[in-house]
Image (cartoon, rainbow, N blue to C red; front, side, top):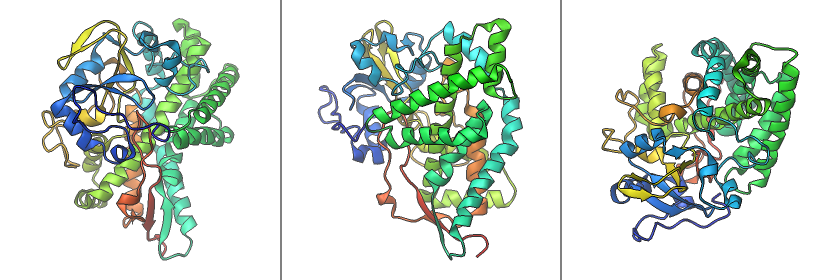
Length: 430
């Protein structure tokens, strides 16, 4: 998104405010969000796409907005002309008939679909999947080490060689995508990662390919049900809970889409935050060396709060006039809750700009709040803890291979993540 359009100025009531959504902002948005929290906590602005929306930046307002039933997830409530609505969701989902998923619907349909997916996405299933996540993690680190050969220092790009493939392969296996097809999903997902902030055509094509494949996979699985999420969705439908084929396809798509990019950024941003806070990293590595898990568990939650993978919650639209944070919002107006700003609100968190891996009072909004709270949170926690813990234990001297100022963040609106994360390490066999 940032590749194509100029930065968005602050609204007319705040002419002295920060410039939003340019490259400097993408590198470190937190000073701008701090200004908005203090001076314009519910802030109307024109986004790089041309859509005008309200940004909600204070924790209390954000928590209220995330659970407010007057704010609909359904893009049909957007007051903009029909041609503009394609700018407010996942590129290509409208044309691919993938709109009927949990991120785009309200009760009672949301309640029905979430109940069905919850049956397939149980804590027990996530717990059963723990050994496989560890196997995938070790396999990817093994490949990184093998590529180093006999060199004194190995090099790798942690985004493309580790943080990206781990959640793709994990969610594919949970969904029941055959292993011989998983590289196709990696390619389609890679298109989303590479081009999510720029021209939308490539993303839309990948979405269409995913949709076509998932529809065919659902057809095949009806004759050969397995122990996987898609099979569980089919079973739920077949037992009279009225999950249509279009809904099943859309649900499989959003579980895949939401289940990989967030975790890519959780791992990438998390490692980056530890590089930038060496004292906290040393604490965590000492804890891991002692065989403890407590600091890793609270640490992943703190990394989610401090520089999480989802910068803004997905789109909401006012179904009728309402007042939020002292601002009057008209029916049809888009509202974007800025999780990255809310989770650094000093009115809610002590020392919000300080990374404290042992932070205990940490009710961050990284997984959302209310009826749209992330169903995949247990899986994301598992992958984050396994990836970060294993990486720090197996490659303990991991370090950035370039100056921090040379890192580039992907342009986009909803997600926050690095384009690449070049690192150096001493191979274990050297």
